[in-house]
Length: 303
Image 1: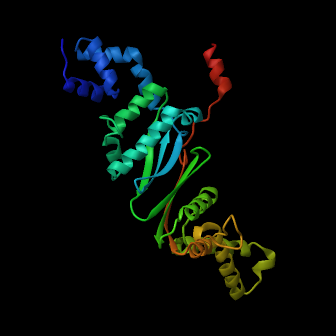
Image 2: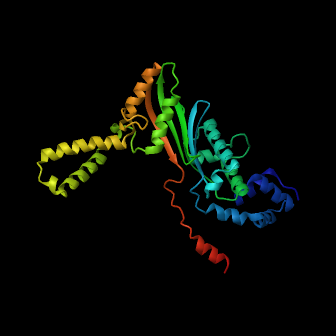
Image 3: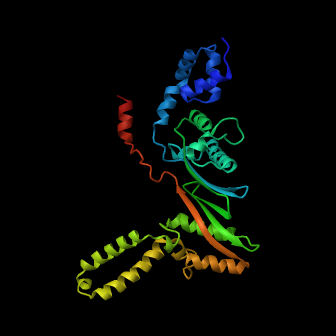
């Protein structure tokens, strides 16, 4: 019995399996849909479905500038080993290229885009990768910058990826400055970019903690309130220098803050550089990883 392209599409939607495997299944089943589903299950569909429920907290964070667009993306896999797999890395780079080409509004829109250089959607290509590599794979998040000058930085082969977005005035190359700032962000992971972003509720919480610490310190508790307020102001300046990127001490040269380093470097280059924004992705952050007990796992296998 013959089958149509619509049959292939219907089977793919029913099973979540890639297009090529659906074609093979329908061919083997002579176009019978039920037999095709059974064929896919026999070939490991159940295993693929099981993989999709497994925790994927490894993988790769990736940043690049493609056709002038800065992009950063995180794609997860189950093991660090797969995160270094050439096919997996190529898939991640293809996702980044797809983002730049289509500029999707969100993750759902991205998954519906045609994957770079193919007729398959990103979702279909992801499903193909699950079958090919044998682990759960998941495109998790992305961001891109279309304006200004973007500079990417990837740390430890994809453990951390940073994209820094700058406004550059004058005919100068801001790549080195951007990379230095990106490395600082990767290393110190500041809570804020600038002290102007620190909200009143954060400041009040910090003041509350500082006042409580002084109240519990016998040497400080008896000091006048005016003195305590002055001490709190000084500590808040330290809070800014520890938590706000532009006010942080520049790691490469402690004589500068990051803000002053950018200004000084730009002046030396004969132009002006303004930090606009940045994104830092660390693979697996916020994902609750399953704690494996390998002794118990091996024991269960030999029972």
